[in-house]
Length: 216
Length: 193
Image (cartoon, rainbow over all chains, first blue to last red; front, side, top):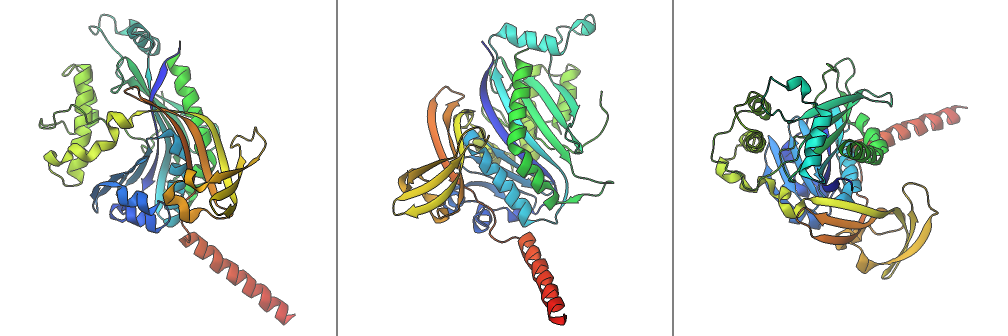
């Protein structure tokens, strides 16, 4: 029996310059990035010059001055997330952008408490801590891999005990693209092909990486 | 070890609001809490809960809300919205024609492993808020699968959603202007010949 995927969400984070107050659901609807009915029924938490947060049936949008985070909480709507981000980037093509991350967060329920501990021991052997700490336990492990597509950036994998699932393991895959060149930020339009051409592949790879780690 | 620095393009595992007491004063940042956890000031579960609390306080402080107002800011993470979707079939579609209540479509396997198919969908099967987009040439996504919530309920899902992109963007306008200039030059060149 393999660990069971229990909670799964995806997100796209754009690091750049934003005007949070603009990102009201009705503005997205006006620009054809959201249906008018969806915008009307969105739960708006705050719309302010420093931050905008609202959620819909499938989306949580959190815009701050230095980053935009769009989270898709329903796996059947991942393509809508892709279109939303491409649309926003198209609307602000010259906006300075430093990086973009294509992310997947997965919580797995382990087969048993023993399997949960075993994974922690495999990824962070306790022998080096023997005699130094009393009952050492894995709290967080983060590994970075180089990109293999020639683009600047990295693939970051974070593993922690899940805070949502008992005896669960949380794995976050951050497919990170650095858009800066000589410390100069790129126009937002440079991020469009990254999202357009890599989103589905990135999600599949994230799923494969996470499953491979937790079944060790 | 890898020492190269990148801006962070992900969020932390800190989006849970249930069962937290937000009245306690929280440390300044999740990273400080991690340090506190490592040095044994808090046990592991306390570190996690405080990280979440700190994240909420940071966010609400940034937007100028009082702590008492923050309970609803993370609605989406309630148990009913947490779960995993298992996709069984997916198609990328395009509308061929709309004929009354019937919509004729072409369906493509996004992985390119299956032959294209043509099908007729009923308007009743489509989201009412996408009605204005349903015309010949309109692209859409169709996903069929099952959703299992964290509390165990399972639902079969068939979700058809039409692609939404901005109608006219700054890029489109610039491209159009550039094209006009190109054609103008070409026309002037031919006239001069």
